[in-house]
Amino acid sequence: MGIIFQDPYASLNPRMRIADIIGESLNVHGMAKGKRERQRRVEELLELVGLEPSHAMRYPHEFSGGQRQRIGIARTLAVEPELIVCDEPLSALDVSIQAQIVKLLEELQQRLGLTYLFIAHDLAVVKQISDRVAVMYKGRMVELADSEELCQSAARIYSFLIVCSACA
Image (cartoon, rainbow, N blue to C red; front, side, top):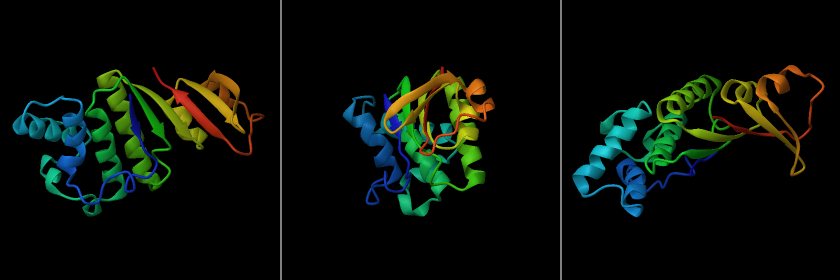
């Protein structure tokens, strides 16, 4: 299991290079034997999320919000999870960048066979990325439905909407 955090900057250690941020998971879980294998895997993960391998030697402050979120996704993918919790991974990003990240998540889902638990307030995003949706209100699940069905019904409006979506 992995997690993609809401704030891509706050979730990255500003004192660590990107190679160390991503590589730390590989070290902790014994997923790379030696520095060369770790470096190769970090570069592979950066390319997988649409970044250049040369970015590995930079620090988080040298990247835009969308690039930082891509780094966070690469870090999550390092442990080869089957399930990824996406804790509002788009809320801190511009609309145009949100679309790019959604597209990336969809591509990764298809390519790697991932399942997402996607937490969001934006029903348009939920509709695009999810198969099934659980609607929560005041900490309780009040509805579980197919994403198409849920999004077509205008009567379903909640003042504090947290939508969790499991994609398969």
